[in-house]
Image 1: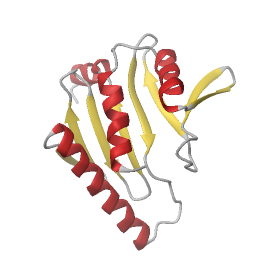
Image 2: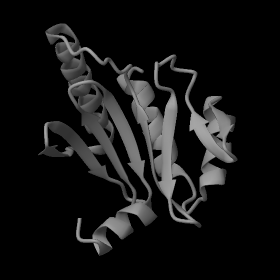
Image 3: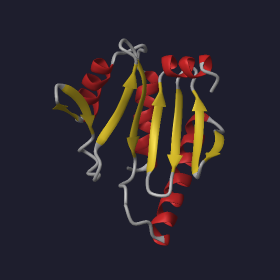
Image 4: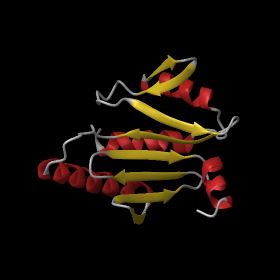
Length: 155
């Protein structure tokens, strides 16, 4: 995904009318992004086949009532890490952060156990997070309900 596509996606979720349930989020993703819902053992899972990544699943985690976050890969994931792939991920992370900074201002940068993160708290109460690990780039939108839960838990 290009940095602009990633940021457009995060802007869409940041502007959504939270709180939303997992089912509502899945429906919106199908309507807006042409993603799909696949059912396994009676449980619906959101999938991003549009980007053509090896692992197309989109994590949608929440309580029974409200979604807490939505996380997806923004690059393909490789099992064998090479110096070239590491450089590619680092360059693309830098471009994603630069695009985000142009839209949302200076991020809070963090490093936890080898994963670099750029975070932006949004006026809606939600949070956008870009992550760089050794094998994949990802983006997460944490809903206002998810941010509040983290605050209550001391994160």
